[in-house]
Structures are given as C-alpha cells and as structure tokens.
Length: 271
Length: 271
DNA sequence: AACAGGGTTGCGTATCGCGCAACATAGGTC
DNA sequence: GACCTATGTTGCGCGATACGCAACCCTGTT
Image (cartoon, rainbow over all chains, first blue to last red; front, side, top):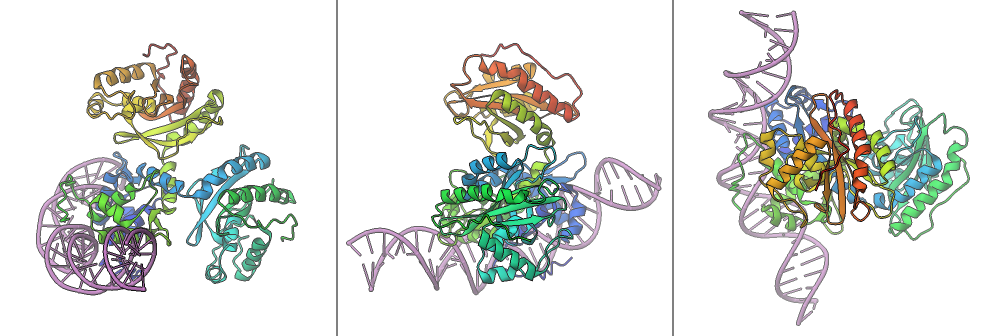
C-alpha cells in the first residue's frame, strides 16, 4: 500500500483532503453506512489511515459514528454547507415560483438541475402529489446523455466542449442513447427547439421533458424538467407540457436578466 | 503565523482536513463568496496555504471559483453528500407526510430539526403558502436555548448533559432566555407537557411551537415545529396548534417504532 | 476456547505541506 | 501612462505532519 498513486498529479493538491473527500464519496443512497475496513478496501488505503481521517471528519461534524455498531455515515454538518451552496445558485431561487405553478399544471414532479463536470445535479424539486410519481432529491446526479435535462445542458455548450462530452456515453437502461451521432442529433434538435425529451433512458418506466434556463449572457445555466411514470406520459402528453414548461423556463431566465429571444417551439418533430 | 495552535489537541487529527473544513465554514448565507486574502485573515493562515487548500477543494468539486473575480464559493458537489446525509435521518422521512398535513392545518411553516452538538439543525421544512411567512431552509442552525425546537431537544437530554448545555446560553434577541434557571424551568415544562413555545426569542417578530419526535428507545431524535410571524400567532393561537402538532409528532414517533405513551397535554400553563 | 473480524492507538520515518518570497494580474489614483 | 496597492498563484527547501506497520482492544462466531 505504498501510496504510489498513478492519479494525475494536479498542480498542487493536498493528499489528505483528497483522501477525505474520496472516503466521504463512498457513502451513497444505497450504502449510507460503512465500516472502516470496508472503506479501507474500496479506497485502497490502510485501515489506520481511514480510521484517523474518519475521526477527524467526525470531530468536524461531517461524519457520524454509530456508537453501537462502530460504522460511520455522513453527518448533519454537511447540511449547513450544502445550504450555503444552494443559496449560491441564482437559477434555483428564480425558478421556484414557476416550478410550483408548473407542478400544479402538469401534476407531475418538477425539478431543476445544473451541470457539474460530466453530470447533471438536481438542485431543486417540487414533487408530484400523485401516489405514483417520479421521486428525485436535491443532490441526485445523472449522466448527461441519459436525461432530458442533460441533453438540454449539452445543448448549451460550445461545439468543442460538446464534442468532448460526446466521447464517453454511459448506458443507464437499454433505451439509453450510446451512439454519439444519435445523441448529437438530439442535442442539436434540443438547441433548436428549446426542449428535450427522454423516455425510459435513465430509469425504465420514467419519462421526462426539459427546457433550458438562460442567464444574462444567454448561457445555459440550468435545466427545468417535468417527469413522471411513462405510462402516464405516453403519446402526446409530453407535447402538451412543452408550452407551460417553456413559459416557466423563459420566465425564470428573464428573472436572471436574460433579454434575448427564448427559442420557443410548439411543433414536435421528435422521434 | 507559526501554527502554534492552542486548539485542543484531539487524539489524532489531520491538520489540513481541519483547516479545509474551517475554510469551508467561513462561507455563509450572508457571505457566500470570499476571496483568498479575506479567508486567510479570518482563519489566520498564510495566503498560500489557503489558496492551495481551495484549489484542492475545487478539484474535488466542493468549492467553485468565479473565473472573473477569482473569488470562491461552496460548490455543488456538496449537495450529493448532503443528500446522502439527509437520507440517513429516519425521522425526516417518517415525518414528511405528517408535516404536510400539519402545514395545511396551520397554514404556517412547518419544520423538523435534529441536534448537532450545541445547536439545532433544520433537516426538513414545508414552507407556508402565505405571503408573510417564516422562512427557513435545510441546514440552517440555531442555538438550543433560543428556539422551541431547541428547548424540546434539551428536554430529551439526560440531566447531566442538560446541565452542561445550560452553562453557556447565547442571546439572539433581547427576548432570548439567558438565565439558566429560567431556561431549565421551561425545559422541564416542555418535558412534562410534550411541547415548547418561543416568542421572538430567536428572531424578533417570529414565534414557534415545537414537539419532540421519539424513536423506538424513547429517545428524542428530532423536534417538529410550526412557526410564523408573531402578529399572527399571538394570544391563544399557538395553543390551538398544540394538538395537531402533537398528533403529527406522535404519528411520526410511532413510525419510528416508538411504543410508549406520548406525553400529550392540551393544558397550557406556559408563561 | 480459540478464532476471525472490525476499530483504535504508539511509534519512527519519509512525505507531505507549510511559510517565505517572488511573480502575475487587476484596479485605483494622481 | 506610471505608480501603487491588493489579490491570487507558484518554486523552493525545511520541518512538522500524517502514513504504514504492528500491536492492541473488543464483540460476535464456530
């Protein structure tokens, strides 16, 4: 375990901080609690190192230890920092009123997402009231090529950046688009029409539609989306969402100082 | 700046991680973006140290740098981890349905908070729909002695732990209780009646009422609260909230496996 | 009773990261 | 424009920091 670390030697980074973050990243929705040994195996560090980092993080409140089992999980101290991070996202605040209205119009779950690297991250949501509904949560993240929001975010990129993102496409379901050619077509269409659709490409049984939120520089800073179970959103139902969705996205954009012409399209020539 | 660090020398801690967290903690709702020099002064570290830690955190996505101004703020990467942390809080999930109902009954903002050290941290909220309302957010935190939720959380402590928390009371407003004797009385009453009230003690103009959420071991794990502008909640209005609030808190407790007798009291002998 | 597995702690060493100082850049003032 | 101040970043070399090892506790199992 001689920390050889072939990982890219960034300009100047702090090893222990990187390790601490790597450890915290091991916790997930599915495995919210982990033991020292388990983590040690996964991040390939010595037990003692992991234990010490965890006690440090525990002292800081970012991690909690269950006194009975000895296992660790992420702590409440993260919430405060995350709350501050959320407050930084202007689009989120601007969108909320419109999201509520959109939710009442469509009766489905409405969400807003931003991009972080090669993933889309949900930063706000208004859950549907229906008993069968699409459930997300703030902080959930998805590949860009598998969701409507992702396509919209891709559509806002410069050509070279888009090209680099088209290189590695991941498949979430068997309906996921993994051909860069096919995806590029969809992204171009999304850029032109001002919305994108996805059916069963991220989770089978779920369909979503998304539209971009633009800021004062006409940059795509977020994607507004409506999603629900595919059986309710088949046929032309999603098409009926286009107009209210785009109205909400446009209104949000205007609040962010966007002054240009929002690319509205009520025509549907999607697959 | 010879890192003399009179700070408590915990068993075994990682200096750079502590520093990284300290830096991240400098960001707040009021100052969501800070420069290296500013942070350097506050945490009393060399500019270069702060800069390097920030670049590390930026690489990890926990921090973002505005390329134009050079200033830093907390990043979206925190959201994912915070989402996992939230999922860990059973009381939150158990409470949500009851919180929605409570919100529709009272038409005021409903929140749920847990304790972290000497503070209460909000972990969920259903905002009121009224235009004048109490606004909170997940991750917001308050002193235990200034809020109804805090008093409820104090009421669930063992005597010795309570005593230690009664030592250092902070004043948020001029109505805040800073006498440990007076606070102890209130806390005892809260333990007996199963709810606590606060008027203008945290923020002037805001009043709240809270009730405890108990788990299968009859431990107080969270506090459910209803809050709003004091002018609407004067007189006996809060008293009318006691029953629906306690019903919601009791139902939540039952979902957590609480089997005992919930300390219900519809009588009011509060000051 | 012995074992296996997990979590924590002393110890000595090498590495990691600190402070220094110099550099690059931006904005303000005369 | 030349100057100055203030900010953010980067080589460099020394020294504290934190790593891996191993031994230690503990709890649950065979």
